[in-house]
Image (cartoon, rainbow, N blue to C red; front, top):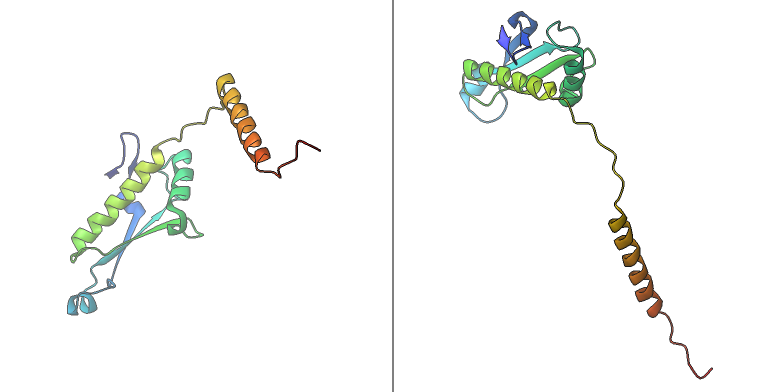
Length: 141
């Protein structure tokens, strides 16, 4: 069991890991050894996630979730499988932890009387300035 929070824990059977060859520099090690990890987690079918966390996780993961609802995390920063495996699991835990935080509701506010007054004074001042930029009229006419 992988413990995410006090309420949420994921069974290790829900996570599928495939080892692939890492991309990028590294010489023969990259060409021969499959040290990168591709972690797959079924978000839609996971019984461990509450519905509200599942919805926020889908939004947070973005294009890392395919149309079948499977979250794919690729980890290939390190040279060893164990480090990459732990990195992928840590990234999954971090993503799920972020999705457990409920967003704050926005409280509608109205502008204060003083701010309305300041806004109107600024508007009058700018209007006067722009009127003064107009053509000069003769007083004698």
